[in-house]
Length: 617
Image 1 (cartoon, one colour):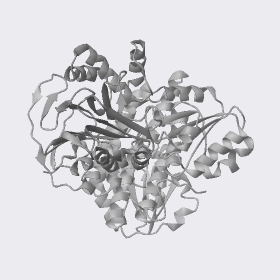
Image 2: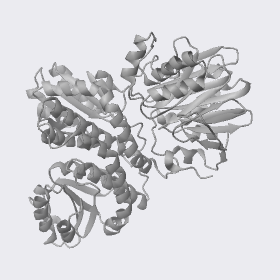
Image 3: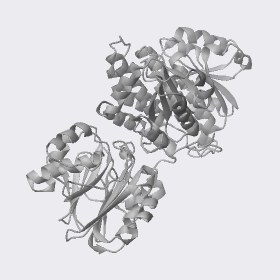
Image 4: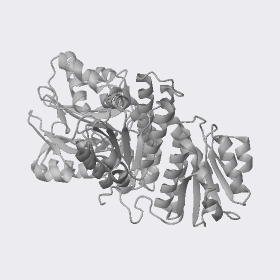
């Protein structure tokens, strides 16, 4: 069977695999470890397993670290049992620690469970359950989920009813697996995050992702949102999460190979991650108002006069767009520099009351870590880390951490992480303006548009990319020009082309193009322009400067008859919103770089000479 890509963009924070055999399996620990390896691209902050027999005995082992590290340290290989769960965590709620590692147990160690995704009302539910007497060992939303199920399990006396009632309380996109200590069955829920059921001879298993299941069986049933399954080693019952009604479906055979399944049918991780961007942005929007760190960060920003912000590569471009957002929306100036120039530029004027924002996808970028350390030595001010990896050095050294919740990004060129970084800045600037009662040109409703705009931008890019590629595929260099708020998009688009296509592309402020670079334009020389409707009057002048030299103009902008008339190729963006156009335009260049790189025979996931995390000066 061909697997539906409907799951491709679903939540993938963490990953789990669970299996139940019809008799004790002496290899359970090894089976869970191997499954964990298959899911290792989903999370590496913590790893853990729980193994149970049919007599009420259990063994729960978990710690900080990658699956092989924890498995070796805690001797997973010696575990045997009938039921088992392995979970790999990508931290969003709660720092990487043994207590926050999954699987989790309820108060009395009578229920065990693991999840992936985000429960966005974790903080309010946790406070409520603590008042009701629940004892938490950590801060993870997966632990909260187990306690919510425990609450209703004690009231209702059975897991099916408990799971259905718990689902009403739990907000967000997630999938989970649960089992009772004194029981023989397991239960798995799909509510926004991917979940697959595998049926074999004498066992049934579930997993967040296909690769872990394909080692055991080819008989697969992808669950749909709002379904949950009760299963033993020989049979399963699929139910509607809302009504409890039984749903009749049969597993189907798949010929998909493990490597193909890891990319979920996509040829490369880069395009897979571009396609995931709308869902990741949507998940982030659920997280933002429920995570107290964002509001704390805005309070710090509003209370500070001099604020520095820094990053490297894509993170710098996201930070630069953040500077525009704060200036335009919150009327709050931020001082930006490349991480590598921070000490030289700002070192002599640092003061103790200053605030530093550091932006790094990995949280391990050496240039950014250097800035953080330098700031600590020369200022008593606070540091806010904006990262994708909560267990990273930058996260641990920051006073306040803002997770961008993009899930692991495997391809070296950053795509979905850029979208979530700038979405965080958009939210922070809106909240800053609101708290200071500053009249703003945008409202919070703009945030809800982000996922849809990104999705539509991907579709338009796919439609138009071949026309652009035909025009530039043999070109050795070109410019991408932005004006005002689209300047960061020009820089990021240019970076993507350099990374993936190995062609010199230069992003530049369009007003500067006439001050020298215009001399390079000749007949057919390609120049990209990105513009908003608000800035079109200035950009039209810059376009005419290229047109009169017979340059080839490729415009990325909202529909506009006059801009279209002067352009040789026009990419109509799906939004005319001033603040979303840079996001939409960046998506186009991500898709362009990917397709052009593949056409040239380049592996977009692993461009030459660069790595995902730059750890050298």
